Amino acid sequence: MSERFVKHATFVVERVYAASPKRVYHAWADPDAKAKWFSKPDIFEFRVGGREYSSGGPPEGPVFTFDASYQELVPDQRIVYTYTLDSDGTRISVSNTTVELIAVEGGTKLIFTEQGAFFDGHDTPEVREHGTNAMLDGLGKALEGEE
Image 1 (spheres, rainbow, N blue to C red):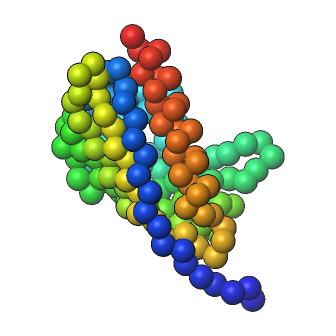
Image 2: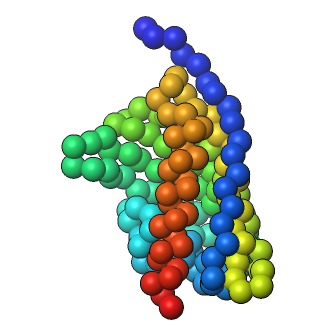
């Protein structure tokens, strides 16, 4: 058996979008809007205690499974959720995520903070932060498309 270990890390990614906090929040809260920049959910219960679940990936694999539980929702201001991420059935991380939406002149400042436990080298904080940057870029493109 290979050595088991956990790497703990926190990272913060910020974006400013030319959209109101209400529109940015809606992009997270509505399953059709979210599917434009994140994986299409199989389960989507956007409420405190609710679950979001999606599974999929590129045709050549691997299959990623995202399983989240919403911990706190403050409309147009804050989203807090915990989630697990699996790759081909192997748990690769468990994270706590906070999304803050702050009204600024001309739009919204989004602050995405993730605190994660990354398991056995299957995933790393650096790879996750890179993916989060790409995800938030996709959110920005989706918001631009709603103009």
